[in-house]
Image 1 (spheres, rainbow, N blue to C red):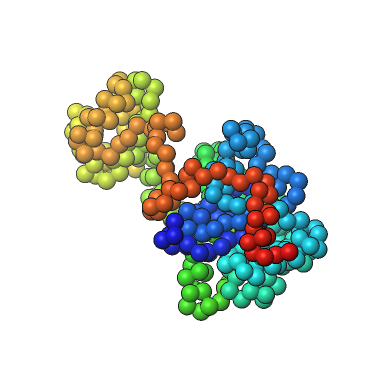
Image 2: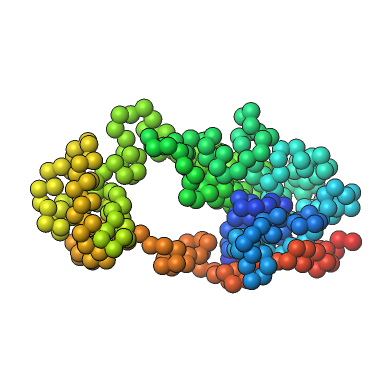
Length: 347
């Protein structure tokens, strides 16, 4: 990956679990060398959480840390603090996910590290917004989504989300902020701090919902299933068909394809529940594949809801050529400590 955008960039990753490692995984796929800095003992405890894959580690850990190098540093120890300072003097980026103030208590605060290396870009992944009462409180994806309002977008009772979107969005925004900081450094020669919180990351994804707050009719509601032409329908074989006839031209094409031209006149109705019930009754009469074939031939947006087993696997970055890390192993705990210290001439 010598021609990758971030080739020659070194990242120190002190983070754990999902958000920070996801951010540095994206940087690794862009060509960066990522050194995972772990404490003694179990290291990043996601390693040992069940279930365990063939390598003895949690498969999510393996996926997030492919191609990285692992070194062990004890920040409770003065020698460990010295080693981190030496590494930070030569690194390009440092990512951490401690609660606010923890690194300062270890004597390796980010401001001091940037004073020793003005080109260093630091990124903190915290849970809650720094100006909130929860700034130092513990949390996980579910609580960040709850605080940001992501769980109460409909009248239905809130439920655990299908995806850890706060964690993943935080990782994406961290990677984006780091890439932007690297671009700025190429001009100014100076690094900067990139603060990211998971609460604000999921909150940023709600930009469309906030734009329509208080309105009696919201476009966002159309995307959440209040339109008969934009819903999931169960077919006779038990499979679900995602019908996405959002625009009138697609709705009309759908009506014509299924032999229900009279439904055209109901496109603009506010209350779509009776119409949706009629569509559901019709689509329940035939298998999903038959409906999909019929509707695709009529140029109607639709797709059978696939399981992960059925869907193809996707690369972590949809725009990168790469792929070299997809089969790379995740590092064992501290596997590269001696090699990295030797290469960086840190005694």
